[in-house]
Length: 229
Ligand SMILES: C[S@@+](CC[C@H](N)C(=O)[O-])C[C@H]1O[C@@H](n2cnc3c(N)ncnc32)[C@H](O)[C@@H]1O
Image (cartoon, rainbow, N blue to C red; front, side, top):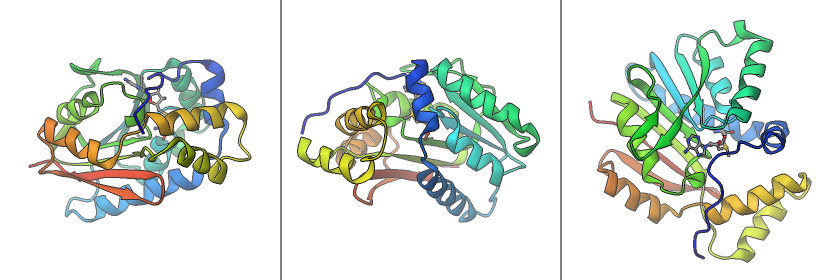
């Protein structure tokens, strides 16, 4: 099945609100646990700083900031509608996430703009890659932002083989969801990459010797590894 792009930014207020209201907590927790497990594999387990690319309303940023209270966690997204929700959530209990902040920034061919100060001990991204019309912007940002030895973790949907397989996943996982979410989910599966395509992206970015790609469950792919020190 050919890839069909969807709009990059989720900047419509209704779309951002529907996304934020959806319960992705099981998947968010799974991402958090996986990142923490990968961090625990290295001698210096707690990174001083972590960036969450395409953070949306902050789902993953909040989970990680909660478990890494000594880490400066920065969530970045190009959509102000998403960031408004993230900042409101943070304002409800700022003491719960002392190291957490959010900033508007866009992944571009020249890297993340505006560029945040310094480099990060971990670069994380969930469910962003399939939004990108030119996926190399993600790997350019990883190269720009990751400190030597940084953990990189990217999780995303992967593209099914056929439109029928897309609808089967929608019916399996989102049959009770509002129509706007079902619509976005179908569009996202059509826009997603295959593991083979992501491997080619890593090769083109010169990252294939440092990062691994694997399929997970019936609908995800995962990229992980540490950049050379
Ligand atoms: C499906 S949401 C994922 C949100 C969050 N990571 C999560 O796991 O819940 C994808 C997010 O990526 C953002 N995004 C897409 N393209 C972007 C770009 N080029 N630069 C910055 N953010 C982008 C969208 O605005 C959206 O908030």
